[in-house]
Every structure is written in structure tokens, then in C-alpha cells.
Length: 313
Image (cartoon, rainbow, N blue to C red; front, side, top):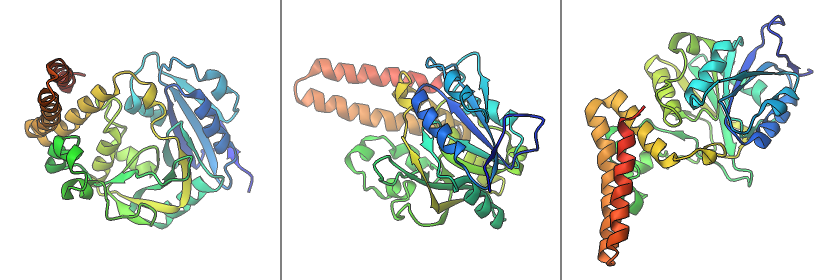
């Protein structure tokens, strides 16, 4: 069957709406759109959302006639950019897709087939590979208070095999076989329209990180499950856009704190703060033991700057 892709709002309702937020890395967007143009056996609409990117994606997006380009007047973040696209989507299924991915020709059609055959599933996610062929770990368990205390803490840095961290990372799974998962990254996540109708969009307060964790958790609370599908493989140039964003480490800590505050209250926010300061304190102590007072002071100053982001936005 020939691919059907259209940007025309008057055309027949597409089966799948693909929502792609873009911030820089337009050359990867070009690869992504080229791969979508080769899609088979599925009627798509493709919505590219320019999140006020310094690298204007307009020329690339408009070179593909099946793309509708939406623009935000300011940089609103990954979650809000997705919401702009979701609000315009008309498909029976909605596909969160990052601009640094490449999708195989039959990939979306097969994901739809699996999701249709699994009434328990609210969403499905494919296997992700690095351009080198290595499998990416893109599915996790939901964060708990224990993982909040340990993630990126001194324990995490010194004992990456800690049971709590291994459990969070699903280290007992090969990440290549089909299974139900709690949290799947929205680098490639296909959901039913009724999920969006019930939950709405992502939380825009989670500007860049933890918005997908939050969305999957809301799906879980609403009774929707997510299935990892091993026989659809996408290429994911992981974090390509994120690497062009300033102060990424501060944004990670800020969004992590907001997520834990949202679901665990003040105790959750304190857990994230304790995790940060355990690591910063350890790093400063190591510098002091080596007689590097100036570097120890820098570590403390950096920790204070990072901690200040947990109350912002």
C-alpha cells in the first residue's frame, strides 16, 4: 500500500498524527522527516513544532509537503511544544516522536497493529538503537522516594549496582524483549486518542525533563498500560537537541525537584535536595582532602546554584 501523508486539514482524517517538537539540530530533523516520508501502509499527518529554535527548521520542514509547521513565539520547552502539536492533531492515534529519530518504513504501521490488538495497552514504544547499533535503555520503573534519594547522589556515583538503582533502571531486563513497562520515553511513544482525550497534554511546568515520566505515570493512574515492542527498531541520536540547550544540569535538577514535589510533596523535594548535596558534599570533601580549598569552594557554589533551580519556574 502506498504511503499517505497530508498536511491538508480538509483531507480525510489521518490514522496517525506524528508530533515532533524541534529545538536546533535541523539536519537530524531532515533525516527524521525523510524516514517518515518512506512510511508504508499507514495514513499519517506530521506536525513539526518549532520551539523558537535558534536554528530555524522552517526551510527543512517546508521542503516536505506532508508536514505542517507550527511555531511557538518563544521557547516554551519540550512539554509545551508537544502540547501545541497535540492540540492540532486529528489522528486516531498520536505519536510522540523526537526530531533526532529515524523510523523504519513499516514501523508506525506495525506499532498501530500491535496497539490495536492489545486492548489493555494505552500506548506502545519501539526498541531504540544508537546509530552504532547499541540498544538504548528508554524504559524504566516509576521514580520512588528511595530512587529520589539515591539518583545522582554520592551512592549512585559510587555504587551503580545498588539494588534500588538497578530496579529503577530495569537492569534485570535485556531491553530487547517484549514486556509491559511503566515509563517509556516519549522519544517514540504511540498512544490511543482516548488517552489524550482523558489526560490532556504534558505538564508544561516540567520544561525539559521528567515530563514523559509524569505523562506515563498519569497514564498508569488512569488505567492505561504501555507495551515495549521489540520488533520495531528506530534509530535515536539520543539527546541531540538537549546538548544544544544551555544549563542542562540545572534544568535536570529543577525538573526533577518539580516532579517529586508534584507527586510526593515537600518530602519529595527534600529527597532530591539531599541527593544533590550528598554528591556535592562528597566532591567538595575529596577536593579538601587533596588540599584544593578553591576547588572545594567551587563545588559548593555550584551546588548552591543548582539547588536554587529547584524552586524556579
